[in-house]
Amino acid sequence: MNTFADRILHFYKNLQPEFKLPEGVEMMHPFKRREAWRLLSAFYKKFYSDNMPRTYIFGINPGRFGGGVTGIPFTDPLRLQEMCGIEHNLPHKPELSSDFIYRFIAAFGGVKYFYQHFFLTAICPLGFTQHGKNLNYYDSKELFHNAKSFIETTLKAQVKAGALQETAFCLGEGVNMKYFTLLNEELQLFKHIEPLPHPRWVMQYRRSKMEEYIKLYKDKLELHVK
Image 1 (tube, rainbow, N blue to C red):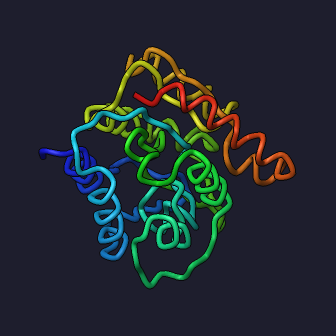
Image 2: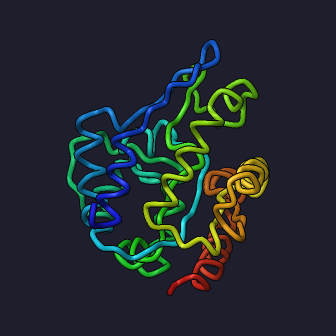
Image 3: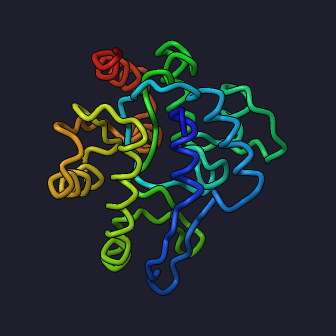
């Protein structure tokens, strides 16, 4: 495991979610699907075949139309092909958070430059649905209680892959930030956590001010380009 890509692919390949799901909750495990594994392998080998540590950016957990399909956080099939240059036959269905993230990445300097310095991931690397809709890891107290040990183990494993531990970013200034702060206090992974508005929140409720939020992201993240 000589590169960042090797280490993160090893991490995803060896995920072992053995916790009990609450009644009516289903798990999204894209890393078990052959096509998703092919795509995420191509993605990480393209952008992370080096040993440079990255500043980590944590979302919540994969969603049905983004990371839950491609296996790559905040990357829907549309952006994976058009922005990242990775061909596939998946339906080109867009996802709101991915739309915002890749607009920001384009403004920041493009995919190669962004991924050279940052690693997009999630507090929980696996996603959940209930009644056919996305479910956040913190939306159910029972789910979080059952998954907490798994989340802690995977957070530590992700950090070992090559994190810069001075600062991590949290996408979500409310509940995700609250839970990430509590987890970090227990695990002592990062010295500082910097919150940012969640992309989905921006696209749903502040879309008319999207350029202002892209600038906010850019201003915050530029301070952490080494």
